[in-house]
Length: 474
Image (tube, rainbow, N blue to C red; front, side, top):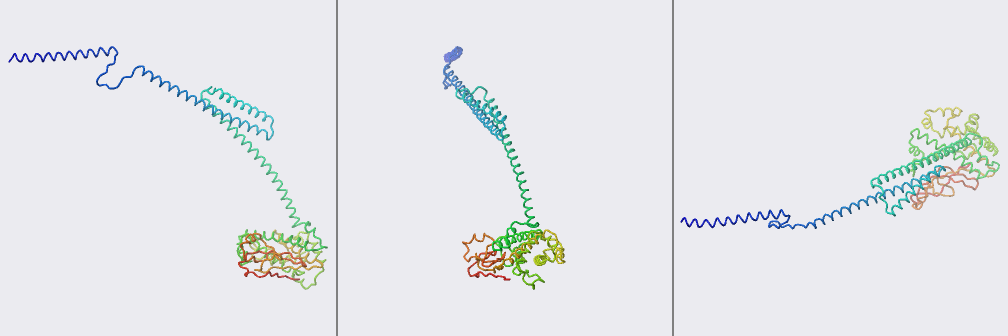
């Protein structure tokens, strides 16, 4: 039994010893190989090892690519800096040329010479840039420095352009101011001349239009001249009256409605025709009578035409207010007094002046010196002169006429106060009707001086009547 056990354990020990020796020998061999610098393929590592030559080639390619990109970036930066410098130089050329133009108007020889030299220098710089680009010498200085210098040059050129623009605007401003000064002088001279003419028209003695009228050869043409002379003063007085109404806070529309209650004006500024119609109606009332229907003179016989000629000559060149104060009881004084009291209502005078002092003075035989009365007296004078001229005709009779309301428009007897009414002529089927007479017409023998009327489109032809002219005979 003991021998059997001994025999069995001996082989086992010998196998363990052999295995241990193999392991010791394998570790020793592995250490020896690694120390000699060889790389052995181990069973657990599946990644292939690169050859040292291959690794060196990879590193060389990376360095080469890096060098090429650096050179490309450097060239691109140099080109961008060159372009910036080019544009800055072009701006400098523009600024120098603008200075050259500015120096010519007004002419300045020293400034022209300086600007010319600047233009030449900038063109030389531009030429040098061209040569540098052709020879590919564009990286003479660091790009960032070139960029900064180009930006500075660009800003300097912009400042020069702004300065030139400011100088040009200042020069234009001075020119405009000189023109304004000249125009102001001309305006003042024109205003002075107008005042002088107005003074001659309203106050002083001579008036060229009336001087050209020959009383010895009275005819319709001369009568038309005196008529328009009178109507100008009527319109001046109407404008003054409307201004006084507006200053006194009158309702202009309501005042116009009081004159023409059933009328709707096409435009607001047409209301002045209602006031002109009212003034003409009052001032020309009694025109066909030799004495203008004045009291205490209606029973007298008709004076000869020479009496009216003398009245015309005596009054045409004088200040009407001054004449009235010196000739209170004259026929013209009575005419002015009667027309003022009829035309200017007491309420109107109170609202204009705050009292009735002018009315009281006129009733007592005196005449005020206010601007309002002066305008009225000038109008009265011209209407009186027209009346005198009408009765100075030798062989022709002068009659005044007006057109009835709603009559059909006739170009023979009428003239429209507004031209815009005919603009819608194509859309009007019934023609035009007379709303009211603004200025009466006149018949001198067979000659007709048209009446000025305010027209409205007629709704239908049946809504208008035939032309009816009412003639007031002497």
